[in-house]
Amino acid sequence: MKGFVIKTLINAVAIWVAAWIVSGIQLAQGKADWQHKALTVLGVAVVFGLVNWLIKPVVKLFSFPLFILTLGLITFVINALMLMLTSWASGKLELDFHVNNFGNALIGSLIISLVAWGLHLALDDD
Image (cartoon, rainbow, N blue to C red; front, top):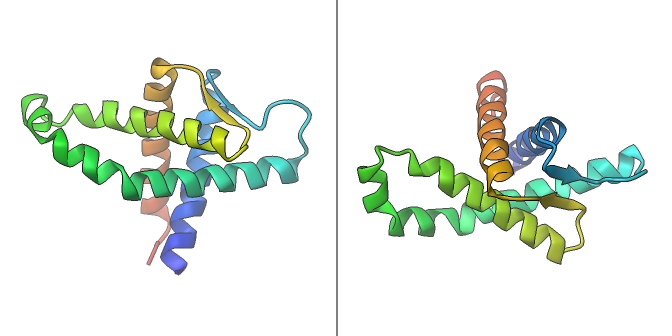
């Protein structure tokens, strides 16, 4: 349970950083107070974790030939698609998170991956 909480918090920070850097990713826009923004980013991190836990392995399995053909670079595209799916699911759950287009999702997923990787190295998630 502790590992899940730490991973969710790491994802929340990574998503917040991506939304801060990429102008095409909106997270709790408007005059929202910090509590609303914090709850929104935590909710989006949970949705993002569920999408990556449930759907990403299936997509990776079916795209295995593309992994071989592209030497793994298709991972960036899959991560961007998972971020766009998170944006869609967040909209259905009325969370204030939106990714404008695939290009923004690609850049955002790269930032999320780098920040999460760095935080996983800095923090012990076990």
